[in-house]
Length: 210
Image (tube, rainbow, N blue to C red; front, side, top):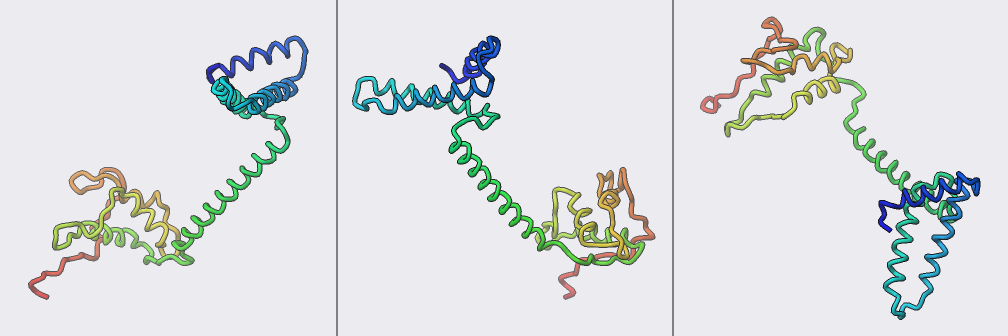
């Protein structure tokens, strides 16, 4: 029988048993599981040198496939107790390993946590952002950018995480307004840094004047 037919096959016989009040759904499951297990044992003890050995092996594989399906619908933990306990222990072990892995990652991230943020003078967040934007545009003698990121969101997140406005947290959403798309170097939607907020200009060193 093809695996795709397992559901229909099982459901047909289950519905017949329930319709005729022959048993409960849980007891029907237990009964079918036991039949399958007995058939597997029957084929396993057959003579491995008989001409029917290949057929027996194929039957075992099919029965085990059906048993796997039964396992997936066992909502009562009705299978043999030792199997249920073994599976639960495996799940618990996997969960412990996952917790340990997540804890290790959390410990790694804690390295980047700060107890006190770098303080930007009150009212000069835009001035600081202007400096960062200038740094973004700096080029090395090779012509390559000094710093580069494919995603502008990293800058608002960095500022929000490590800097404060006179001790107050700076919302990332507020910072994102400075990092939206631009048309002709002018912010199309968002907050533009005003000329009165620009106090510094980063100028590359002339190599001939060193």
